[in-house]
Image (tube, rainbow, N blue to C red; front, side, top):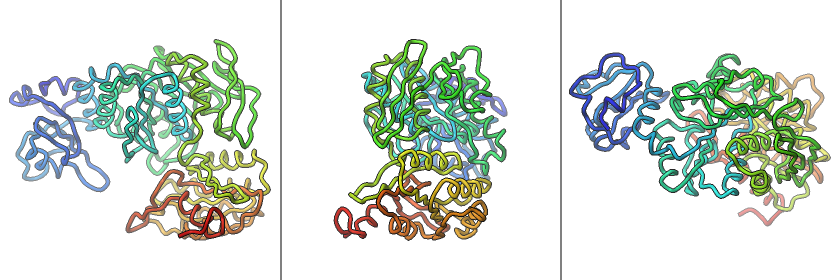
Amino acid sequence: MKLEYVLRGVRLRRPLPAELADREVEDIDYDSRRIRPGALFFAFAGQRADGRQFAAEALQRGAVAAVSEGPPPEGFTGPWIEVEHGRRAMGLACRNLWGERIRPVRITGVTGTNGKTTFTFLLDSVLRSAGHVTALVGTVQHCVAGRILPAHNTTPESADLYRIFAELAAKGGSHAIMEVSSHALALGRVHGLPFHCAVFTNLTQDHLDFHQTMENYFAAKQLLFTGEGAPPPAFAVVNWDDPYGAALRLAPESSLLSYAIEQPATIRATDVKVSPQGLEFNVLTPNGCFPVRSPLTGRFNVYNLLAAWGAAQALGVAPEDITAGMQKCAAIPGRFERVDLGQPFTVVVDYAHTEDALRNLIRAARDLRPRRVITLFGCGGDRDPGKRPKMGQAAATLSDVVVLTSDNPRSEDPLAILDQILAGIRGLDVPCIVEPDRKTAIRKALEIAGPGDIVLLAGKGHETYQILVDRTIPFDDREVARAVLRDLGYGGKAA
């Protein structure tokens, strides 16, 4: 496709030179190492490096031109195109170049503070149960028609997304489900992407290091429902029990499917029963009442199941396929994931890293009627510090024992982070162990556990690393817990 058509709709800072307009573009990328002849290179300024510094390398590899929000670096003499917004420009260029290739794919995007990953796994299970070939894009992994890809970002850049959806279409796929983070929305990673269905789970304090205020955070989520750079989604599936969900502005073209437990809604759960074996409830819909059984536990997962039901209904899936798919989705990595080596107490690893998620996690544990709840968690460094005392208070209020430790301290002093968490615990009558070394902290939490207790290892979930000030080390709560349990004599001795 000619460059002038690839850049159709992109806001340029100056007219496209005539000698560039007729050049043929065959690919789009933002990583100079992947550039091949005929590609258009987009240079973004990142936290670690400025992509403009790699423009010369991209041209040496055969790039048609470099595109950026800023001027070319000193000494650069190749074709340079300045645009008003780099990521929006790349999104529109990808749509112009590859839009027809992904047309067979219906894209469902989910946004919200908590529940996005569980929702995507549930809807993916439902769609596959109904016979569809799918793609799943999210925090834990990306999966394209059964092929697993590593997830470097919850929501990849637009060029990566279009490649995923084009591969899915080429393999006969029909549906893609993706987590859409507030960062991706604010930065323009999904600008111009045609969403068929947009889902809102909830909104609680998180990422204020990036968004600064809850108003800005909500405004970023709102973008998924207004069709920025693309038509609005045909369907909006919204949590009606969440005040932010009720405040969302929807386009007139979007059909609303609200879901709730407490409020009147299009899709509603009644007769909810929570047990160690999972969840049972009835779903009331305009098409009838349907019983749901799920191996997932915790009242908060009722909302995730309702959201998946709403999206599946919007996609035309039959109720019997929805219920079958939900029953097949037995576990989500790092989401209330149990570590069981035959010990007389329960060990759960969960990604909960916000106040609301931590409260929901502990309440879900309480629903299982344990003798005690022992909650281990920390807060990430270089991230929203305002949530730290709130998480401390939540854990101390609902738990029987609290163990404070590190969770990706990054460039911050781990002890300073722990002191901020302790500000929310001081004055509350709960035993509290402070141990900045996470491996040692997990050992202490498991050593004090007794028969009938639940130990919650919160914050990292599926993550397999720990980010320190000077390096990133391998670290998996699940593997550490297994090793400690073996040392304690369960499931065989540790090597």
